[in-house]
Length: 506
Image 1: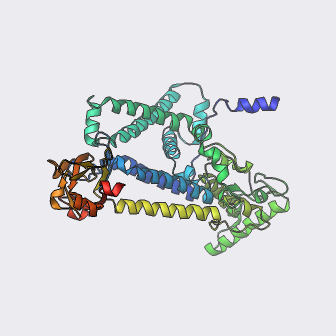
Image 2: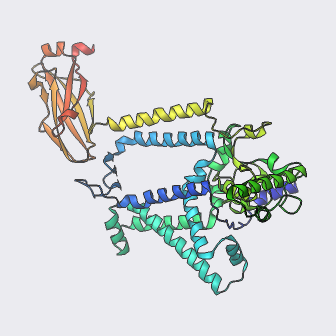
């Protein structure tokens, strides 16, 4: 009972700050590259010019008053909601596909929370120093140094959060004019409300909560386990190699030779000879440790210090791990310094680690689930691309008014009525002509709307009627309505329409 109570209380325990140590390596460089590219896209895209005849010259603009999204040369209207559904489906399948292959790699490299937290940690490190200095600053009493450094850190966090929020708002209005109006108090109230909410949420999520967002707020960390398989690559610690039979141990006399001693023993001979002596010394040091039953882990704790969520990967796979790979870089650095083989911590699968002789890690994509995700991803992406490439410049809908189906006039003629709706999906105002084929030229009556002009993103409604004599109605069961945009005759679209009469409906 006491244990269960402690588990419950642990869910609400006070946050212990995590001070990460900076590290160099392959995964750190990749994370930095992703961050730079993502920030360049996010912060610069609203300022990229794109000439348009009827809208501000902005490459990406979410024009809510005009009920359209302008994305470079593409104009998206509410009628294109199928594209949003496809994008959401593709994003979900891509997430499942990537998770099945390499675990939470999305969280470690591409998630907004990860990207902004990384940037905030960088600001913290620039102002307060490396990890030991930040720990010392956290523990020392409040004084002038602590006030200045913490104040500067939080001020820059707030500035970064504000610019993040303002950039988001800039996607919904012409960016240069918005910024000018914002700072002169002339922007819409929604702009100030949105900027305030996003500034506060960014500051709290990336500056104050950080790993708690991944642990307690984001649901992905909780349900990721259902997508893991024994073949899934994830960040693992090779316990057999790291622990040996006697456990892990720091390097000191009798447990391996430190790098300084190896360098001293290397002598001053030619470079080739020196490398040979150094390698043999490292092999001897590793052999000494293994002969005594110690593993390759030197218990330096660096893998814990660089972890942005504060876990010890040596305790096994954990739901808090975001698979960022920084612990791999840290461990490889230590292995290199002692001349031990790399890969004590690495991306690997549980199946490979459990095998008697682990093979080099590789992607296991030849699985039914992964192939299924891949096929669905290709099909939906292809269909989305096809739908965008073949989209007409307008939509049309022809509905027969069915109450009544037809009207018999006093002279015996039969009349059917139709409602024609045209939606202009191009980026400019357009005029449309409506014609009929399969009936006599005089049969179509459009009133005063032989042509109709429609603004971009808007719809026009035309009431039409077709009047036939009894003899004509007896032989005409269908005819064709054609809608032609005058500036784009090649985009003309036709609709097959039914004509009802007493003899045909009985």
